[in-house]
Length: 415
Image (cartoon, rainbow, N blue to C red; front, top):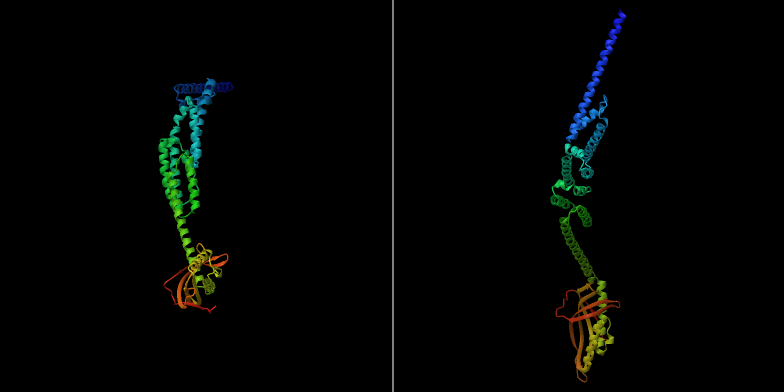
């Protein structure tokens, strides 16, 4: 009797468990059907984001077999679009966090290409709208643009200009971020002008002219690559070139001035050099001795240390004297040189100028006339030039005033 009771109770327990399991399975089946119907409702009304979790719930419920292929197929399409859109946003956000703005821009371009490719795909467009992908990109790109502007300010504040990648990145930035192509060009131009004005006010005092010119040309090229005509930098370059020209002209003028001063100092030093003065006075004395002999004989072959032009002058002079049948007789007494009058020059040609007094006894008369020798003292200005054959007298003219404060006298015997 006791055993029968145990068996009866055991069978009743099994019945209860079985009934419970059947009831739970029925509940799960109901849940799957309900989830499937809700998913189907949202799917048909194009509420794809709402449909996806119900399809997933129905797919994971294996209590009964109910529209398995349809549920699996629709869930795959929905989850695929979900992952696609989510991956784009995750990549964009990661690029922004890492300050890899070029990658952010490329991700955005990839998004636009994908959106164009799937313009007829309602599922993708549904997820795109749900996650506000365009608005997210707009925010990230706008923030990236502002960060690049801040980098420009940081370059100025730190006076470091090695990293100017922001130029290319700002140029790559989608036009939508600025509002329009014209607004983009206007905004970038304004920021670049402000940046370069501050930058080159610093670099003008640091870089050499060639370095500065190279830096500006390189930057003009960078702007050109993004479609910006850097007129302000071209104007800056012209000003720098003009300033450089003026600076070089001033330096050249200063160099010439110092060179001229040095030359004058050397000329003055040589003009006062006793050995040089002695050399020149010897040459002049030899010339005047020959001059006296040439006049006495009316023969230009007696001349020494004389230029061809001056020799021609005397040749013509002697012919004139001969034609008038005039006789000149003279004897040189002494020469007196003004040592302070010596002026040596190395300009177009090496030359020396000086004052000398020629004192002589002389007379001019016609043949058969009586004559009387008279002593005369005539001051002269002489200029000698240095040639391959030595010093030659090239110019002579009588002067009125002669300074006798510092002189050297040479006396001559009759000859």
